[in-house]
Amino acid sequence: MHATPNSTPDALVVEQFVSAKPSEIFADLTIPPRLVRWWGDRSKWWLTSAEVEPRVGGRYWVIWENAKGEKDGMGGQFRTFEQDKGFSLAFIGSHAKDHTDDVAIRLHPESDGTRVVLRHSGLSGRPERYADYQQGWTLILSWLARQY
Image 1 (cartoon, rainbow, N blue to C red):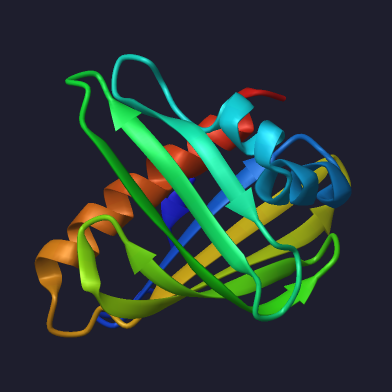
Image 2: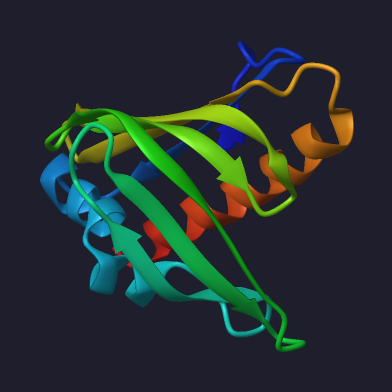
């Protein structure tokens, strides 16, 4: 997993190979009980709930808690939704609730699994958010991969 060379100051791209079919990964990303099952690490932070309305215009929101007992949320509204291929969100992060970014997740089948490509744009002029999201998305996608 890595931030790809085509990342720019505005757009962060993180990729992760997962040893599962795109349909399984799509379910892991869009079915609330499955999201809560894999997203997190009790030594850092983890999801406590998820709300997903799987349609363009639908809500995608997750609530997390950290080891200090602090809670927060992030998510947004679906801009696109393609079953087993990916989706995009008008995204509001836990780090900057006054700013809407774009987050797109695409699932690319490979012979022995799926390459998950996450693109987070709207970060221009916000280097501290870029670094936070790079660390966060890298960690989240590694949690997704570890279950397979």
